[in-house]
Every structure is written in C-alpha cells, then in structure tokens.
Image (cartoon, rainbow, N blue to C red):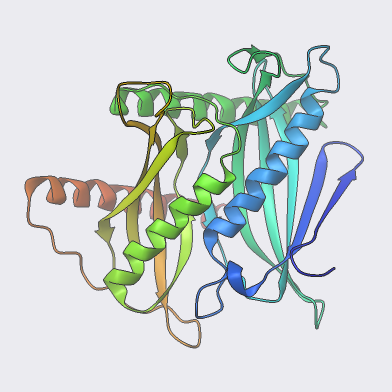
Amino acid sequence: MEGSAKSFYQSPGCCIQVSRIMRPDDANIAGNVHGGTILKMIEEAGVIISTRHCNKQNDERCVAALARVERTDFLSPMSIGDVAHVSAEITYTSKHSVEIQVNVMAENILTGAKRLTNRATLWYVALSLENVDKVVEVPSIEYESSELQEEGRKRYEAQKLDRIETKLRSEDIILPAINVGVTMKLMDEVAGIVAARHCKTNIVTASVDAINFHQKIQKGSVITVSGRMTFTSNKSMEIEVFVDVDHVMESPKGKASAVTAFFTYVSLDKEGKALPIPMLKTETEDEKRRFEEGKNRYLNTKAKRTAQVQKGQ
C-alpha cells in the first residue's frame, strides 16, 4: 500500500473496513494526525456500508446521507506512518434510519502493533437518487438476540429526542446531509486553530460532541467555518464550531446555519503527556453563560465516563 491508497473489505453480514496510511499532510507539525482526517474516513465508511445496505432490497435506488454524528472519542493520537483501519458495522435499523458504530485502529506497520484510537456512532437516512428530498424506507437487519434489538431501539429513541431538543434550541430544522466528510475535516481544522492560539503548544482532538446538520450544503454554495472557545478545564478546552452556508445562486436570504458541534482538545508535551490548559478569560455575560454551559457538559461527560468505568465498560 502506498501514499493515500485505501482498501475496502466487505465481510459477511453488516461490516466494512476502510484502511489508509497516514501521510505528512494528514498531520500537524508535531506529527499527530488531524482529528478531521479521521472524521472524514469514519464518515466515508458509514456512507459505503449504509448505502450498500439500503440498496439491497429497495427497488428505488438511493444514497445514504448522514443525519447525525454522536459523540466521538479520540482515545489515542495517530501518527504519520500509522495505518488507520476504520471498521464500521450496522447495529440498528429503524424504518427510515441506520445506526453505524465505528472503531478505528492504528497499526504500526514496522512492528504490526495495533491500538484502538477512536469510537463513534453515526446515523444515516436513505435519500432517493431521483429526488434527494425524498426519504426512502430502510431494509431491516437480523439481530443476534432480542436484547440487542431493544438496546438499539433505546439508542434510536435517545438520539431522536436529543435531535428534537437541538432543533428547539437552535430554532432550526435538522436535516440529513450528503458528502459532509470534507466539512467535518474543515471544522476540526478551525477548532484546532482556536485551540493552538490559546495554548501555543501541540494540541490534539480529544472528542467531538454530537454534530447536527441544519441546512443542506449544495454544490456551488459558499460555506464559512468559524469557531470560538467556550470552556476550559485544567486539562481540556471546548471549542464551539459553526458552519454557515450561502446558496449564492438560489437564495436571496444570505447565510444560514448549516452545521454545529463542540470539539474538545487537549495540549501535549513532546512526550505526549497532557499539559495544563490556560484558563479562559470571560468578560461579557454571554461569555460567562457559555462557559457555565460548557462546564455542565464537561461535568456530565465526566460523570458518564465514571459510571461506565464502574460498570466495567
């Protein structure tokens, strides 16, 4: 395998693997691979497996569109020369959506050693190729047990509720989106710039909160990606990222919110150990409010991780 070559492997059932070697242009000056590069690979794997599945039984040809990315954790930095193995599996289907769970392994091709670097959950819907505004039904999958099916249903209901709450907060609609891997990569780059400016050190993506899509990004549109720091703890910083879209050829209304997400970054020294984060200074009432909201998200995530550890997960 050379350069940026990718390999695709479809195993029996509902699994797929995408692999690619990490190049210098995939990483920052410290050699750590950008989180956006991994996010793009994760989204590509999800599109492949869900599109294949949705066309198995449908007479109407369709393409899978990303509706939501659940929280994505970056467990370990990936480096130049590592091979990223992205494994995607269909774990639940509803009438109109597909849940894809993804694991990313980094392989040291000199030693063969592998380590888990990422976990993610994505939700896709199937859009008709004849009319991309039409959502078609999704073929069901066979579950190994009724318990697994019930667990999937609970995850489906939870993300559906969260999307409704997000819709109410943003006073906007939540839409599926096609070919968003590049957009997510740009979002990570912007968040990384904000984090690097704050710390003046080597920074890496630690996690990404739920990514929601509010506006379709069509060919010929102009997008603007912006970010702002909202919260800092002793070892992490949260950056809110916005993508605005301007359909310059079609809409006279100007820019509209297309995508929003929260990225969490950490700062590392030359040995890869976490460095303290400078405290974010807040001056206005809005800045103080956003800081408290970020603090609540941080504490909730910390509590969930503690509960998972106690359960032995």
